[in-house]
Length: 148
View 1 (tube, one colour):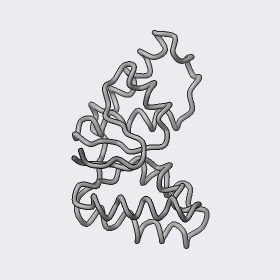
View 2 (cartoon, rainbow, N blue to C red; view 1 turned 180 degrees about the vertical axis):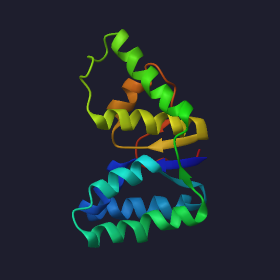
View 3 (tube, rainbow, N blue to C red; view 1 turned 45 degrees about the vertical axis):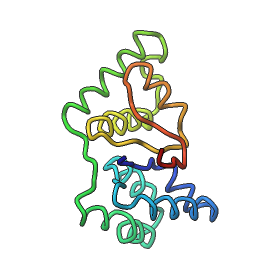
View 4 (cartoon, helix red, strand yellow; view 1 turned 90 degrees about the vertical axis):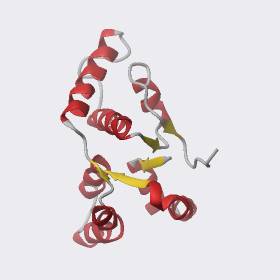
């Protein structure tokens, strides 16, 4: 099984030692099947509060995935599907027009491109993905899945 980790897991790992250890353990166990999503890269770099942190994120997280060619990048089809998902949610009155944060659009993009690539998304943000799943079947699990 292939996995990608959502941004919230990396942020938790930075802020909390126990979360950091859990992420490190999962990453070590699943390294050959672990991918990094381009949206997660964007979110992490956008949140870098100084140049030192930006360089650390690049060196310790982004560069190793880039070197191995394991970056999940959204296709045109994934971008298009994001618009369709949001439209369906609004049409079904599960969301209000304009009543969603940009982070939800990012979640839709992560979901659609992971689905295209056959990748399971690991996230703490189950609530948003459950909403997406009402119109788009995506494989999302809470931390930390174990092989069946």
